[in-house]
Length: 319
Image 1 (cartoon, rainbow, N blue to C red):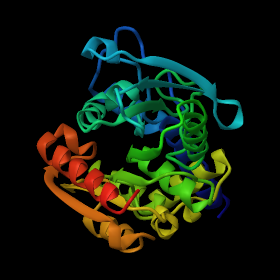
Image 2: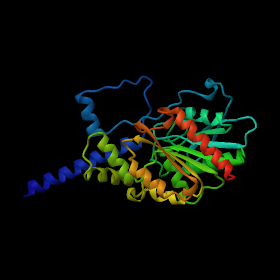
Image 3: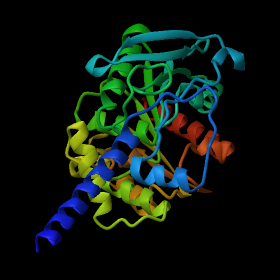
Image 4: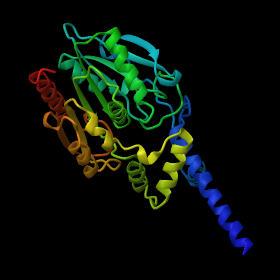
């Protein structure tokens, strides 16, 4: 009898230890080696199973200057002592500005493609690295739960320093979730419109979807991982539900989604769209493509058309 009890306790402790390792691997970044070599095989597989994935900090790969744009670098305080870094690319004669925030594992240089589209449409742009990404400080991510503070800091900074007459927010995945959470807390002011790509509806659902994509069982394992990660970062994972934030977004929204996104399913995106607070002035656009990430990477022309139409709609309604 005691042998069975001890065996069960050992099994429970092992599961909790594995969950902790995987939660840390997903939420705490490591510095990427100067020379990164991807390895496979039994040793690497066992390491991943027992120690979790290595999440590396994103690095700046390109600057606006390399693409022919003059820009200025800005450093300011975010939430909880984080130092944030952004790039401002001006457009002559424009008083409309788009604030772009990164996705998980991305950085402001990865958003330069989308920034080009906004610049073509006569918008100024401000590309911001949220905590743990690019040039900004920190070594953790909370999938948007705490990053909303960085978004709010960015909004207040560009309003104070650049004084745009019209401000638009753009975010993909983690960045989109941070924007939605900021609206839910009622602290976003002076924003005319929002462009969101592939935000998850509930944290537990995106964890389950990611485990399915890796051909791992989701029963209980997803919940253990969610509870462990939330416990380590100090929040209730079952209360982290962007679909519930959608009703608080009281400005027009352009919602973009790939039809074959394994991490955010169409039904989940449709639920977010249906709950938007300014639904009559918003639009959901689905793009036939696989994978999770920015639409511009798979269909630049469709992204360009969608942005142009959205900006025109904001102008028509006086925003």
